[in-house]
Amino acid sequence: MKGWRDRRTGLLLPLTLLLFWEHNSLALICGRLASTRFQQQNNVSAIMGGNPTNISEFPWHVGIMNHRNLLCGGSILSEWWVLSASHCFDQLNNSNLEVIHGRDDLSTKEMKYHKVDKLILHPKFDDWLLDNDIALLLLKSPLNLSINRIPICTSEISDVQTWKNCWVTGWGITNISGIKTQPTKLQKVKVDLYRWDWCGYVLPLLTKNMLCAGTQNAGMDACQGDSGGALVCNKKRNIATWYQVGIVSWGMGCGKENLPGVYTKVSRYLKWITKQTAKAGKPYVYEQDTACPLVISCWVILFLYFVMFLLTW
Ligand code: ARG
Image (cartoon, rainbow, N blue to C red; front, side, top):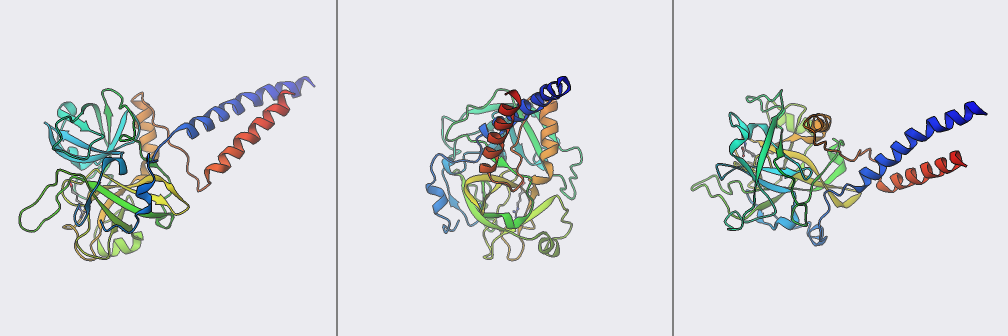
């Protein structure tokens, strides 16, 4: 009898921790827009070949500034962390880096600048192949999350079939022929994800840490200045939540027929992100995404409560 009671208390502790973890992960709100209007307009042709957009449609998008000049794009992972590309920060230090957020117009006067405390580049970033093109920026003070500043979700799912309705955003150049034009208003473009083997066939030196995305029509792509920005998609089964699948990394020119853009495959770096953010004292916790819908998590919680109830009876 005593042995059973001991085992019972032994079980309670892990169960309580599990419940706490489940609640915490459910409480994380990422990738949800204040309005769902945007999700219905799937057929808008959208950057290069893109359309201007409002920050409320892509509230995770931020600009990374060096000496107050736009350097690259980035995305909000949490109130403390911004995700971007390593190649943006070649030989730069973080003292002049700032992040602008919650705005889609670069010419606006009331721009809010947020200082960067720490820049973490991937230790295996290869500046020739652009392999492991990922970087984390820790902010000096936390962001005030709001409808125009919402963290993007991440997912360990790497299968391109899971995703639909994929978009890239940025203030990069919109035209490479003639005069290079850089927009002041944030641009969006809709792209399709391609299977890795097809990408590897048309693009040389593609590594397994990269994915490619483009459109059938030439002229629609990310381009110079868009690097570091997020490639985001919905799951086929859940169009209410946005996930970051890629980081704008490189391309052979921009918008050329049959030459899709190349992105860092975020799903390969979630463990690295978790480790680095914990090491810096501001852990980023992502919701485990095992193709299992959210409702199941609720059942798991209920079931665990039931087990706890029986054990404490
Ligand atoms: N490397 C570029 C940058 O630093 C991004 C190029 C993306 N090119 C493309 N065709 N998708 O902004």
